[in-house]
Every structure is written in structure tokens, then in C-alpha cells.
Length: 302
Image 1 (cartoon, helix red, strand yellow):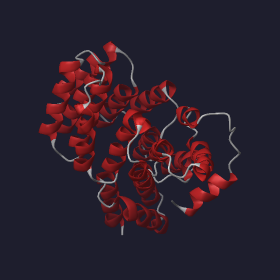
Image 2 (cartoon, rainbow, N blue to C red; image 1 turned 90 degrees about the vertical axis):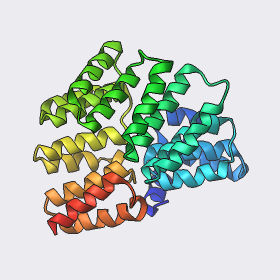
Image 3 (tube, rainbow, N blue to C red; image 1 turned 120 degrees about the horizontal axis):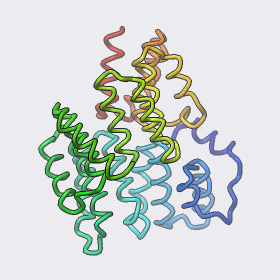
Image 4 (tube, rainbow, N blue to C red; image 1 turned 30 degrees about the horizontal axis):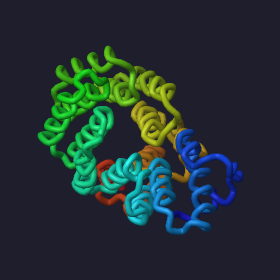
């Protein structure tokens, strides 16, 4: 874990010991959750549930390597099966190993008590694993499995749209986006709409969709990164930097945030800062495709 993050933990306000860690995680107060877990681990250093919650908090904070380390220590358990395994797989994917993520995630499909809703979540995770691996045929297979279970889930149609945009079939993507919106508003569906707007060069529409997505849930790394990227693409790297330098995102090691930091620094003409961010990203996420693109972007500017 990075020194700056440790300093942030020490300097943060003390959490209320009567509040469960899950409350902090649910509220998006991940630093508070981690601080609380560390204190509890002093008395229960072998508690698998605590390590699973630690992995979950770190993964949602953007500290994917630390998250994987914590999950490796938890050795399973109820929390891991309920929430940790999915976060573990997501962290592996962000670290550039979507095949390992998919292999881990498929274990959930063996659970005979898996509800339809949870099954769809697993399938959607497998869709994104396949997309990250460049396996669009595999992504289509998993989204078809999800449609078979819950065809009218808006998140499924949003995933269909994402795959169609990856393929380049924007007509089919537009149909899926319309169906997703008709079935209900989800953060994924709205972000997919923003992605479609970006493909059309409609930055104002993309901004509007991303603001709508923020209204649905507490802020997260992916939304902050996308909002910054929209500002950068419009030629406003200063505004993009302002988003990324807010305290919530300043210390994160989320790969999307780091990747866009590199591009923003290049656009600002601060090549030395871009190199620093590139070294930071390369050390953890050398196999992450978004990071690789940003490294190429920097190389082209040198």
C-alpha cells in the first residue's frame, strides 16, 4: 500500500466503533472502513471476514493489488462468497488478467442456491472479463446466458449495447440502449449512453448522462475518470485535472484514474508529471489496456 494512502488513513477522523464496517463500505467511506478493519485485525488477526471486507474496500478505493493480497488471505468465508469474490475477480481484471478473473467468477455459477439476480451479475461480470480479454465472441455468449435468465433486465441490455459498440454495430447498440432505458435507469445503462454520445462527438450529451449516473449512486472512480476524460476530449485539461485532484481521487491507484491522469498531464504540456504518473501506473497495471493506451499517448508526445 502506498505511503500517501497510509498517511491519509492515519490522518482521517476516527470511526465510530459501534458502526459496522459494512456501513462505511455501503456509504462509500472506504478509508474509514479500512481504518476500522485494521483496528479489528489487531484483536482478530486471522478473521477471514475482515480480510474479505478489507479486499472489498481496497478494490472499491482503486487499490487493486492490495485488494488481491487481502482476498488471498481471507481463505473464503460468507462475506467472500457474498461480495468478496466478485470484487476479487474485478481486481484481477483491472490488473490485466481477465482470464483469471473469469475463471474465479465462474465458480459462483456452481452455487445451487444462486438467485436469478446474482446469476445475472455473474454473467455480466463474465461479459466484461471477455471484453477486457478482447474475446467478443465470448462476451456475446455470456450476455446471451444473461438474457436467457433475465431478458428484461436493463443492465443486460446495457451490456448488449457495450458489446455492439465494441463490434462497431452502432445501430444494434442504439436499439439495446433504447430497450435498456425503457426497462429502467441503471448506472451502467447511463454510462453506456454516455459512451455512445462520445462516439458521436456529442460531449454535452455525454456530460449530461454522466451527471445523471452520479445522481443514481455515490461517486466512484469510474465516473470520475469518465467525467475527466470528457473534459479532456473537449480541450479542457485544466478542468479534467481539477476533477482528478479532488481529495476523493487524489491518492487512488485506480487504473482508469491513473491512465487519464497521464493523458491530462500530456495535454497540459507537463511531460515530467506525465512520466511520474506513467511510472506509477506501469508498476501496477502494465497489462491494463487503458494504461497501455496512455503510455502510448505519452510516448507519442515525447
